[in-house]
Image (cartoon, rainbow, N blue to C red; front, side, top):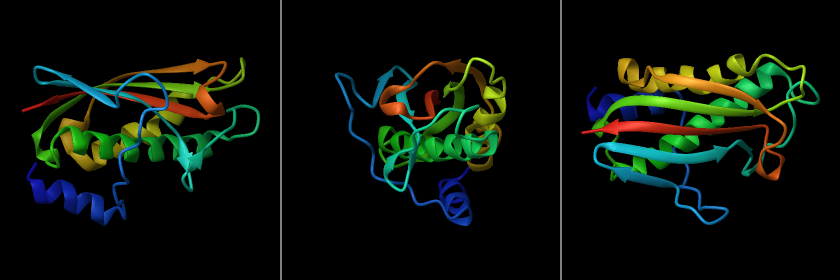
Length: 155
């Protein structure tokens, strides 16, 4: 994909990449070894604040999907920084791991995670197709409803 097409796609989707978040504890937002970038877990935010809640309790699957999409936008912003402002360096989104704050009987973590997965394919095309895991967890830092991390290969 050409540089312009990735950024044009973001613009067409009305996505403006936010400033890269700062770590909330003792870690970095991304680490690179060789051609692989590991992006730390990013939590869902809405209107600049933690998007708190629990799937199966006070957040619907559709809202969770929107939260996962919002996380993906933040992840793309961090990836953009890791790539020196050039997302065309991305050769493959390798793996996505999604943690969904959910009740014990909630079983639609995979549908929530589609919010992030679908956006990555929209933006990066075939390079955005990835392996993934989606887990239900008892809690996420600051009560966030979703947390997602990425592993990305770059040129």
